[in-house]
Length: 318
Image (cartoon, rainbow, N blue to C red):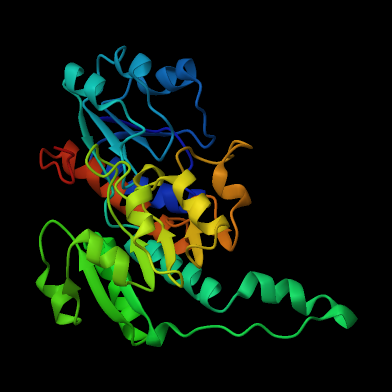
């Protein structure tokens, strides 16, 4: 089979060649495009002779997919596949797979990092320490060991996050469609979304982007939060009503927020309400982006390609 990697996967080229060697040894042809492009014409040119195309989070639109006559698999080196036109792929009979799981630990650690930064006021303390003679004095913080942490979505990433908070001594609550025994073994108490929002000191969101989850953390739900509570979103932006969250922060109805995901991918528009929200730490969708996670996703993407080429597809999106 002809396998084309359409973009750099944020690992060394020598490592890509090492992974590609397994494909070549199995008799497959491999082509690697090192630069990233979002131009549909260029994406088509890179894709049209391939049986398998490997992409990261580059948008892969219908106008490209509809012109593919040879491609059998879109191998997405990413967890989410909402940047691929799935309807167009289905209409062409093209399968889609992903690299789900590669960033579980990375995203979990960012959730904890954002919460720690807010509880100990690290950004403000960093600025205060630089004021020399104008130093206003230290800021008194809070300990996660004394907090109740609500995990919204206890799938693989939510569970990895729960383990980190549990290690620090936090009390765990959870909201999910089904209760997970591994989570309950950590002492997690499952409850309704309303209860988790109302009782938690830290709320960490780990849900996929679906029609059911869009706007789930609404103005009403944010209104149930305690004044001293902090909201962390390292999942998907549209799950949270960002205007309602910004309003609650600016009115000091809640204590803080750590946000890694937005309604759009950065760069953000100037009218993004969270840009001017009080006591908010914003990161530009970096939850998945660690050295270790990039190696793991590259491995998974190449394993997916080889498995499909050998007639044993894995990690397919249903």
